[in-house]
Amino acid sequence: MKENRTETNRRGLLLCVSGPSGTGKGTVIRRILASNPKMVHSISVTTRPPRQGEQNGVDYHFRSRGEFLSMLDHGDILEHDLYCDHYYGTPKSNIDALLAAGTDVLLDITIPGSLSVMNSYPEAVTIFLMPPSFGELRRRLAGRGTEDPEAMRQRLEKAREEISKAELFTYCIINDDIAAAADKIMAIAQAEHCRYERQKGLEKNILAR
Ligand code: 5GP
View 1 (cartoon, rainbow, N blue to C red):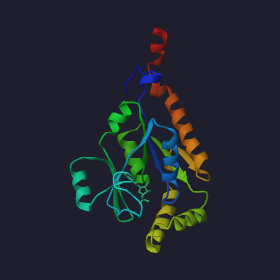
View 2: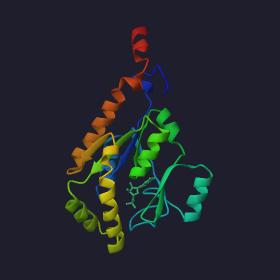
View 3: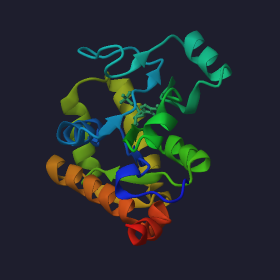
View 4: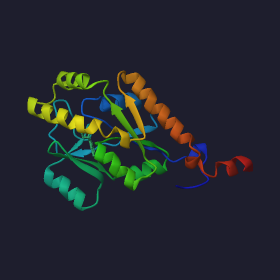
């Protein structure tokens, strides 16, 4: 991490948000983005077919399996995972440039995805978004109506396994209220920016002024 940073040239945070499908990660992230122009969401690449209403380049970069594997081969993917038979990956593209420019980058990724980011970016912040209960998760997934019964069964089965991995994350937030969950993520980001480690050398700049 670069030293002698001040509040104005601080490095951005890489915020990894994970949690079972249906917990509301996307909704909470959209809420954060709406009120924070200095935060961006990295749009993932996926081989999953688009759901009704999803737009290429907005919700995801929708690609064929061949295209995805070729991106992997070319080193264009920062981390990736195979989730319910489809590939999902974070494009490397401009993440380093955004962080260097002080922009906070939000990733909505699987648990193995967050753990893999932690390896390459140990300064990343990992947040587990938890549903209030398994029953509520089932209701939310069913209510969303985006998965057929088999895909829903797969996602719920996966959710049990995912929830048991919460201990691997630094932060855990129960999403029982979208606005409150978004505020908590913002509070975490604010606190993380205040860590001395992220502001090393600041005192020299203060004393020099
Ligand atoms: P969905 O199909 O519901 O949009 O996403 C399924 C899962 O894939 C979610 O848990 C979501 O967080 C995860 N996901 C989306 N993009 C990425 C990515 O780039 N990398 C990884 N590892 N997971 C992702």
